[in-house]
Length: 484
Ligand code: SF4
Ligand code: FE
Image 1 (cartoon, helix red, strand yellow):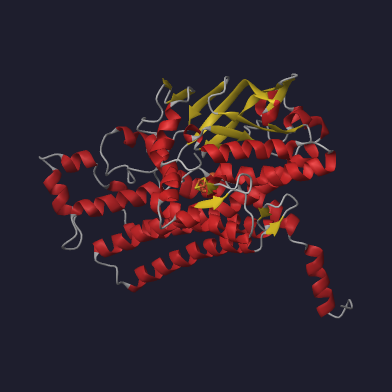
Image 2: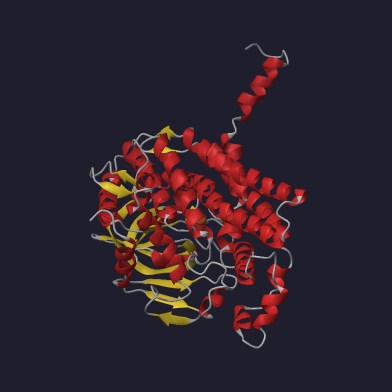
């Protein structure tokens, strides 16, 4: 089986026995939990569209490891066309789910780990790349969702991992055995964690010689012994427990994050892809982050399309769709959104083949892409809120609307233009609220800022990649100081 259906995927998660906590309670069945299910539906869309004749070309690829068709989320990019298709696929998914669909972290981790392990083997004589590719072939054949886990909790950020009074604040190796390693620590804000079959762990920063027990990369099944999952809260999350579908804004889809504790988890050697080779930790961090910064030029743009559509619809419902200032705001939103897409496509077009044969995006352009993502969705959201009007945050609840005593007042007084039911206006307002302030705002706003690295992380990379000396040289030549 190399392409699961959406239903097979959902059912496959039922077999995992995991320690999951949500709102202080231990949860046996996360699959059907009303706070988790919308996020699961978003991931399921990555399976559904791989079977849809309209999208098959975008969502599937031929495995270079097995020769079989695989979901693009499990694929190693073989050319710039693959890199471009990845961004296009992410835009489609953003458009169809209006949320984070979570599966990209695994895809970005596969491509980063593949390129780095190959180069590490060549330099140090290790055999990690073959191990990793055997693992990836297994993931491809089973069509699994893999959580790419990078971010450690860190504690006091001024201290290196080995200097911290609590050594567990960065995930590290606590025991080396003949059959594998034992690890301890945690990974924070893990996207789509409860919807994943596997976790692929990477270091979170460049490690030095003293930190070599922290320079570790490995994969474990999501139900490995010693893993504890603590679900992350989202703004307005308990609206999902209220039973209606208007107030959540996007009833079917969503995203989620979790804090994952690794309490002495055993990893057999065939799943270890770096252990102590700290010299290569920096490249792994840079490349994973680079791929994920490219990703945002697709996923956030797709969600942006939904938000722009919602704002334009509300303008129509309010009877001001033709007002010139509204049209201008919508144009500005499109301009910003397409600028992000242009960056996602550009860093893909400028991708280069690495020694392993896998293609890497242009790191400078990917970082510029993500730096723009830290800003533009905020402006798009601001304009959407401007167009939506204050009613977006003062509107009565769905329960009031359904109440026979008062619902008719809401229907009468919250109407817009003739021919548009008040309920449609309410639904659209709640969608904008969901994307700008509610549960999906995690993905569209704060994740745009901090996901794939906070703004300063991109500025460091932009500085590193900028090649300022060659720019100075250009200026010296033009100024007549240097010869060409
Ligand atoms: Fe994918 Fe975007 Fe979610 Fe990251 S934030 S997992 S790129 S949808
Ligand atoms: Fe993300």
